Amino acid sequence: MVRKVIFRIFVYTFLSVAAFLSVFPLFWMAVSATNMNVDIIRGTLLPGTYLLENLRKLSEYTDLGRAFLNSARNAVLLTVLSVLLCSLAGYGFEVFNSKAKDRFMAFLLLAMMVPFAATMIPLFQMMAEMSLLNTAVAFMLPLISTPFYIMLFRQSARSFPYEMVEAARIDGLSEVGIFFRMFMPTMKSTYAAAITIVFLNAWNQYLWPRVILMSSESITMPLLIGNLTDGYLTDNGIVMLAVLIASIPTIVIFFFLQRYFAEGVLGTVK
Image 1 (tube, rainbow, N blue to C red):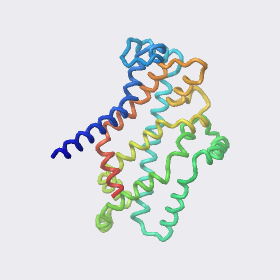
Image 2: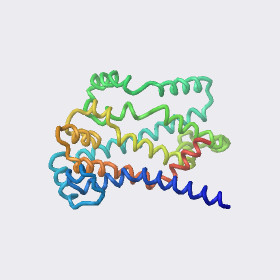
Image 3: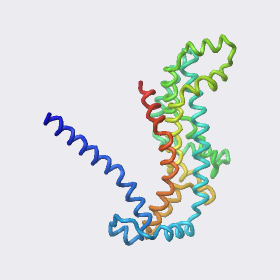
Image 4: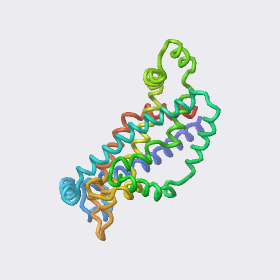
């Protein structure tokens, strides 16, 4: 009995410390957004009264609205197209019989081993030749379909009863109808997990937009935050406020989809 109590105390203490370490950066970011640069450097942990002033400076020095809208547009469009195309590919890899599909899937998985930095220069040259620089299309094309997302949906499609597909085909339902009317509603947890991952990845993209988006009209939130830290003197209050604003969409998406996200990931692993 005493050992169980001691073990439980140890577990709760460990979990409390881990939770504190996980939440503290968010708390520090929110508090710093309300303080002056001097107070942040001093390490204050109390909320200040400088939030509106930091917001005024941020809006004055940067095009915050344009950057936020650009990030939202890019992330939403990329999420919708990526989830749709990758789910179609994953469903096709699992449902349709072909001797070459496993070999092609293995080739796609090998492509995951190639770092993005190795393909970035050829991709830039391709976008330049197609006159797509500084466009949302150039931002989305290299990211719209990845082997990881295809594999995610293929693994989920393995739990989809193939008897339902055969029965639907006998009833005269088209392959497109089977996918949209049967597969998608059944795999909503996997879709929620994929939407969360794709949106977070698209919203937080920095390296590729830094290369491909070179005008102020196409700036995104990560690029805006990076520009705030490029000077000789950084105003940490403004930077923390920009990071806080940039974190809101991802927090909201994960908050609403967290239950389905966990179910989708666990279902895929099984």
